[in-house]
Length: 163
Image (cartoon, rainbow, N blue to C red; front, side, top):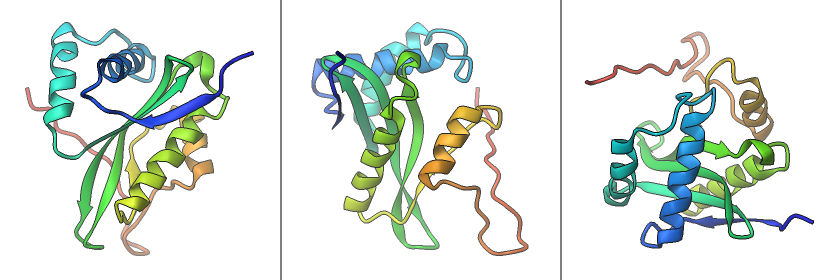
């Protein structure tokens, strides 16, 4: 019988949490909806120090017993229109053999609870338009595309890579 899933806020001073974040981020990188390949060795080396030094890092880890099975890597931002903080879910990862078992929903609920504790006005995230499973999960949790006002159009996520 599988162990229950527990969700904890990561303490990046603890080696086991560092290892869990690296393992989950690498699993996401290898996924077809990630980068489709393992994390670059240089990225692996810089990831934990970078997350530790970034002042708004917020990470929730899901474990089955001692085994990491999911992560929500988030960053606290700020909404100028609400004049309140917000939480952006940058990465949400659940190992493929744990999908459909409520791990993602549990991570989202834990992020929302933490965001409410911080006085945040909203949660944000980005998702690939062909990732139907993730889209369905996010919509079921209450996420939607948004517009600031009717008729102005919906927000579009854009990026400009900097080499």
